[in-house]
Length: 578
Ligand SMILES: Cc1cc2nc3c(=O)[nH]c(=O)nc-3n(C[C@H](O)[C@H](O)[C@H](O)COP(=O)(O)OP(=O)(O)OC[C@H]3O[C@@H](n4cnc5c(N)ncnc54)[C@H](O)[C@@H]3O)c2cc1C
Image (cartoon, rainbow, N blue to C red; front, side):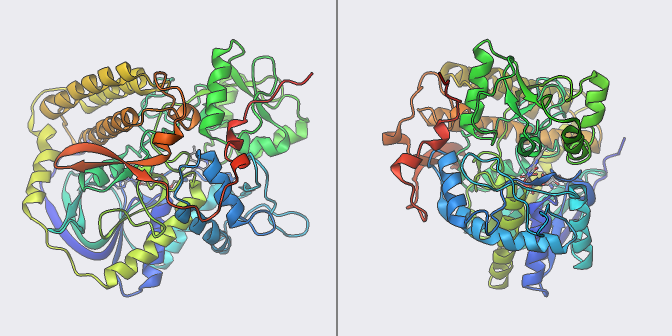
């Protein structure tokens, strides 16, 4: 196992992008294109070539606004309704206006999108109202095609560096970041005029029911470091009580995936094989109906394909078993399950924080700017709701361009160099002990508590006990955790982010005293939606060393929503007919 090496280097750049998954490479590329003279560094915990949620490809764009199929106004409206109206429409609208040009750009990178016999994009309907899903027949190539562009632009890439904390200047503006090499534990201080956080979801928050710590729905490297770093730098985080919870294949914990199979006639069914939800698009309301079905005695819930023609199932398998999670075919083979013969059991995922699928993230405006000057965020960790892969690409582009411009007009911020020593001491503390609790045990304990106390339905008393227990685990982490090599040190740092995210999830959930977003924020002791008091965002941040939450008004809509449209996503359950 990798030994610990004592070392610290310092570099400077105009724009530092942290996280080389989906949004990050695009942000770095666009920053460089915007200002070819700028020094842009892309820093990644793993290896950009194969990192992040799209490392094994993607089967399609979940939210493509393609002319002739949808308009930016329709999309903005759909996302607003799907989020119970609590949406800053400006960033969503900007995404919707911009994303088609990004599709064309991805097309020029060699990523193909499904076309019909006339050569037009063959967009499929999965959402409740509009049509936005664009399949990618060679979706397994997406990361490779993106990486080729980075090489072509000769971008500076620092692989195997895990960012741990941001540096801020005397006036609160961003000044850079501190990172640790995941193979040697050497430190790297990157001074930067602008920093873009693209570190994905907080995906290792809950524990999957399979019990596998890394068997998460999300890319398991996304341990919420971005959320934690933004918090400690004083940035505001939005709507963290709006958890991510997904309908997944039981034990496999990958998407079922109704987006691929749905357009061919597959659907989510109960144990009688009947449909019970109108639409398989993931939303809090849809997850609530899923949960209700499980409680009703008609569970488990299944993905139903066994009514489809053999050729259709084979076509679906070509995608499901080769892209995104290529092990899926092996899983079914090992278990002896076949889509043609039986329905496939599904279940409810572990909780996470992720704007890509729900709405919880570091607060950003339509330029991807956070509340800390010079600090940007894009992708699953920024607050633009339901933005998925194309949102990561599009908002990553927006962040890259704006950050390059900002850096061009700014000088390096002065910061207190004592912060570096403080961070070194925090990071290395577990390596200074001869004996203690290994990080995986602390992590397991924290995540089991997340499942026991924070998983919806949310109960106030349980949350309060959960907070107390998590504080005890934090104490163990700070005083007893031991890391014997650089790999364990990385796990130790990830554990710290996980506990920070669990604390934020609990704090934000207790603050909003109502129920909203279906299962995502279902509070049993405040079961009603309360628009009078809670038709607002919540912002959580660190003030004077303490976690605080406050309300933020929903900004005036760019695209109005009629009264009779507002609750369309609440009508998910199939009505019984005579
Ligand atoms: C299983 C699955 C299936 C999906 N299917 C689809 C689909 O079919 N269509 C669709 O549109 N969307 C889909 N999505 C959503 C989409 O993939 C994501 O929304 C998008 O890829 C998120 O991009 P991102 O850049 O925010 O995160 P990621 O691509 O995950 O990148 C985050 C990067 O940050 C790095 N990182 C994390 N912490 C640190 C740190 N401390 N220091 C340095 N680097 C760090 C990680 O290693 C990673 O490379 C799916 C997601 C999953 C998980």
